[in-house]
Image (cartoon, rainbow, N blue to C red):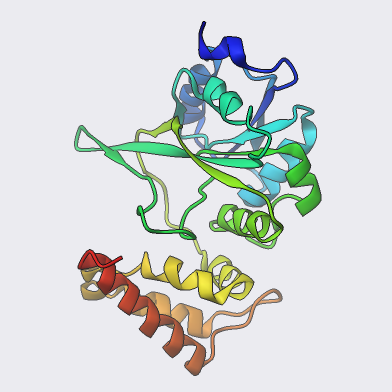
Length: 263
């Protein structure tokens, strides 16, 4: 008996993929989905190449078009393993599981590497390169917060799900490969401020993950601090001097403790 033989006939999966000007990468992703050990009910691609509204809006459009009880999210430049859908369904056989976070691998100079969260991180995680939710969870939470133009909308959704009492399970057997991490860095300060305001205590761990010796030396950390002190729009205000000092002093301590293996 295989794992597929134990899966309930009531389970099925819609896959949602936002795409932005990556035709070749998207074709590679779709090819992997076409060769799954268990096919998804549907594959919904939302092309944002012309409007550039951001992945939160694209993902909301996508999951609302489908009808399966489980919605799996990945990115257009990712390659799900052949048993990705099967493993997702097996994990959702547990009635207590409301969402799952899967494992992501990558490649650096020909060597396989992991993009999984730091083992002790509880909050700096939940990337939609490999996440799946029950439809009812997305319906109850109204999906992704569309104020996030790009980045962090996936972490925001998971934090809100957990706060609402839903169980998000770590599922390392659900594997997606991210062959290359190319792309243009895009403005994300609004997203950082939105996530900070959602839960300031949790965000400390996120901020710690953005600190390294290299980023301190090359000025990246200083630039980020400055941007969060100066950026504002109709959705967010910049950090005050005191908020910034509190956030980055505690985050620097967290980052140092991680470097020393103390957390």
